[in-house]
Amino acid sequence: MFLPHGGNADEALGEPWGNDDGVALVPAAKANARDWTGMRLHEDFRIGWACLMVTAGCAVEPVAAPRRTTPEAFQVSTLADAGHGQEGVEGGLEAAYETAGEELIDAADTADTTDAGEQKAAVPEPYQEPLAPMDRRDAPARATARLSPRECRQRVRLNKLPVKTIGYARGVALPMRLEGPLHGVSFRGPDEKSKHSIMDCRLIVALEGMAEVLSKHGVTEVHFGNTYRPGARFRGKNGWRSSQHAHALAIDIDRLTLRDGTVLWVEHDYGGTLGEPSCGPEASMAEPTPRSVLFRNIVCDVARKGVFHHILTPNYDGAHRTHLHCDIERDGVWVTIR
Image (cartoon, rainbow, N blue to C red; front, side, top):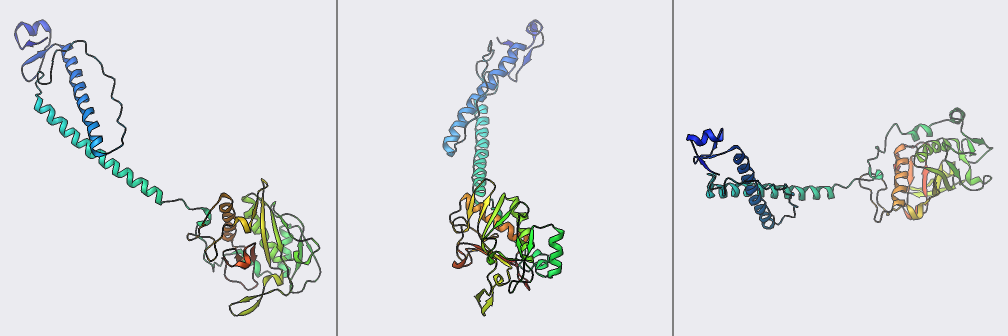
């Protein structure tokens, strides 16, 4: 219902609402005209939005349109009748489409960049975390290696370690046997009467530090081949040298048993590659498995503890393909894993 401005019409209808073309609308018509205008703009914009999706090649799911409400009575039949003009409406929609299109393209470019960045930024495994410097002065191995037989005996008593002192063993400063677990970790080697399970007191102190780390990873047993080999030697860069096995200061570990019964074998589960670093940012595995990653994380955690001077792994050479060699050196300085 359209009424001209002024006269009795204004008085009869209360407070008329007029547009710029001199068309006055009653209050109900005012509300309905706004609803109709908003729906028309929304419908045109939604169609333009869909066209923009096809043109830009974006696979963006459009937001569901609000529920349309049918006006009880339209007082205006077209936007032009309401005084907006067809050209003005089309110009406004075109500008809106252009702005929306730029925002969609920018959003798509940002999403692509973010996805690519997330793929490149892979989270490193614990074994790939940096290691301390090889010449670290605070390494427990350095202090342990300097213990005299008397100091080591006092250390064992103070920590109440389950050991038994034995008689003479050639080349061993203070020979002992380990007779119980350390921090809940049992060390199982050759027969208890075998000479190959004799340990220097300082090796037992180092194993206590190792057991602290292993227990946190759920390790309950360490299986080793030997600790003492009288007169053992190895060929170094400058010729033959005395091995730390000759002094019962080394242990060759072939497997670990976890609390749930899982057994991790060095030969099968270490995941090593000859010549590659075992730990640190440059370390990697050609074919990692959950078992190999777990095993490597445990070994590298022990290395970070610094309780041994040397840890030789399958990555070092073929002679260590089946075991981990861990030792402390009487005059050792470097703390390494290779």
